[in-house]
Length: 379
Image 1 (tube, rainbow, N blue to C red):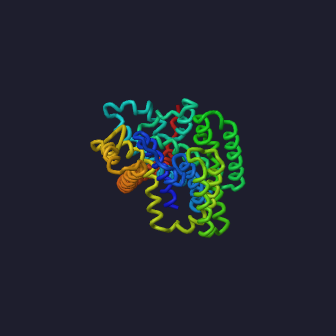
Image 2: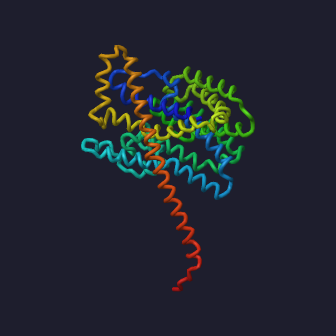
Image 3: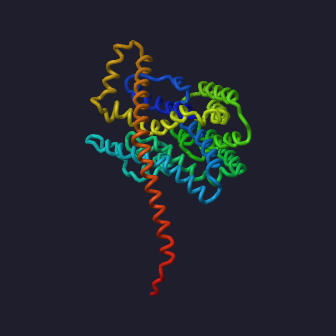
């Protein structure tokens, strides 16, 4: 499972490299480099994986009690926020450099809190997307807003199979209505309603959860999961990689969800897969900053990326070759940064925040009985 998650993060990286680097120097990537799962399509597949994993841990690790729900929320908080706040601080610092003031968001409150940021991006300047709440290099944070909304809902809807299935149907119906109603309304509106609009993308989370229910009830072999994963890749390659509303993409998502139970059962205790999974979140968060630092607007290290983009074309007499090399260089550097970030930023930050939460909780427990014993002061 960790390898699949890292591959999806690579799909997001490829799309951003294409949009932020290759397109500016007259080059383009081939979506088949990531089997058509690039950019937004990879994000929606991330939602499927998230639905599966959250459905699994809620059943296996967190009991359906108040304490279990609080423990679940605490684990999700520690998973998302410590590294995100570190990234946000770095992006704000770099964005404050002279000449880059225009890249600062008007307020850091929505960016720091994340919850609801997906709605602000989608609808604050509807039908165009508004990215001003995020500093340059941190724009991927809007997807965390959608994830957090799902996490808040999860303990109350995923513990009942009937409720979860009903929510899947409602969201799928909402998605069908959005595709039908907004397909001819222009690209901005169509993307907003099929990619950013949470009620229409919740179906992907719930699809993953249904796969977790299947995993819990039936033994799915690795061979069947491999066939389903191959079918998912084939359907993804058939469709338009920049569309979120065609039938090959939705069939691909369905096959992908059906592939998860067997793959998860076969790899959940594999150390290599778990290590690759550990790199996914730091890679997803930091790759845009890496691209920005290598090329523009930051162009650190003496404009290393720009220099490379100028040197390669005379040496490699193929646009495709240059695009592959540049994408490969960005990928290697981004993976290296993700590994270092995981070791020296994410893990220490998560430990510090967890200790702060534990200390705060103990202080509240200590103050509670004392406050209860305190005599009332009569007026």
